[in-house]
Image (cartoon, rainbow, N blue to C red; front, side, top):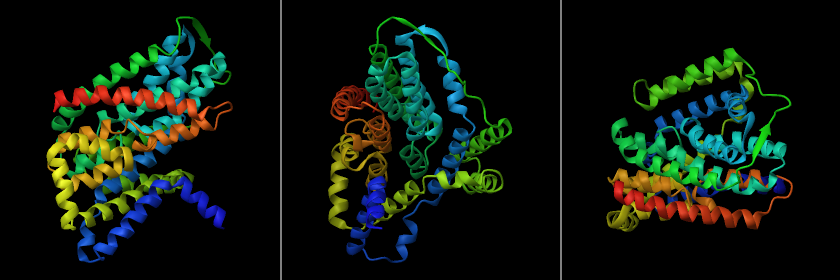
Length: 371
């Protein structure tokens, strides 16, 4: 029992930290009626809806089919690396950075193994991680912090995209250049013995419709409860096993950080400290906070102390670069890489850190110009 609990704590480390932070904050601000206003239920409903739809896409093999069609045939090895890196960049805009890595990192190992180019896996996975973290910033549904900030500040699409699109374009240039430097110009043939097929076309059509409903909710055309109810009903009727695959830990993590940040906002000394830091430089404060507590909790925490949403939005997104803790997606790809035979943890972390440091410095400069 103890071993099982410790294993759960290791697998849900961020949730455990969030829960501990929430409980500690309760010592300073005991539970009262104001707690009811901490939790943003709209964000939680949207997250649930999107996670359900994405699990449906995975169940229908949508991502593997698209990736297989892009990669099959004779191509330059350099182009293969570029495609493998850009796939999570663009996919993360629609289905979040962590899901795109879960879907595409194992697929990349398969492709490189077929080509006999396993030596490239370390660099490709490190670049895929950076690409997913940066590509996800381009849309409100690309990552949880965007979804939260979009709702928290009641942003309009035009205002949101004016901040993130220049950063996303600069990121595309950075990761594309890195991918092209991964390999030489030799040509290779990619053949899949059993090409992936759409598992259930009618289900896929339904999930695409549900995804469209989620987007309408993001842009405040329909209430968040409508896609949540539709996704829940569809899963109960037709895909009940997928309910077990939804990341309820992430939803609970959000609740805990809502409580933590709400309580901190009621502690005068903490509020004064954070407000002062954010007034001095909200962009750098968001980037630094993300390095230690991850960018999603940083967005939730700091949003209660600043009205400078453009700097906060840019900071928590580019703040996903840096340490492996800065973005939960980085930990996912690290775990997937270490599960492969011949994985070299030290070498991977060195390459990962170098790529992240270069990307972070470059995007800080771009952010200074944009903001």
